[in-house]
Amino acid sequence: MASATRDAPDGEGVEFIHEDDGSITARDLETGLARGGDTRGEALRYLSEVLELHEGGGEPIDDPDAFLEEELGIDPDEVPDEPKELPDFMR
Image (cartoon, rainbow, N blue to C red; front, side):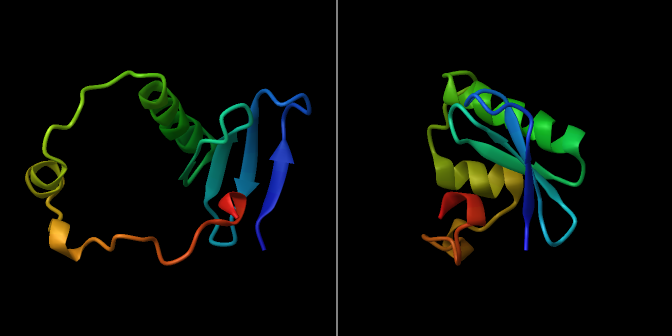
């Protein structure tokens, strides 16, 4: 079972969730956005990218299927439309 630590009780800051597999999820308490990594630092770095995109940063992707195939090497036809299971913090 995952456990969580809160750095700020007032709805601001970041909550760290220590997952059963040893990874750590960082969740922004204001937006509810989250991202995981192998360490707290990695999770925070990835969370900062998510927050930047949420605030309108980054470049738009015109053709998501082409991006998946060309940039990430993923066949779009093999990606499921729905996740198998939502993480605990999204339930």
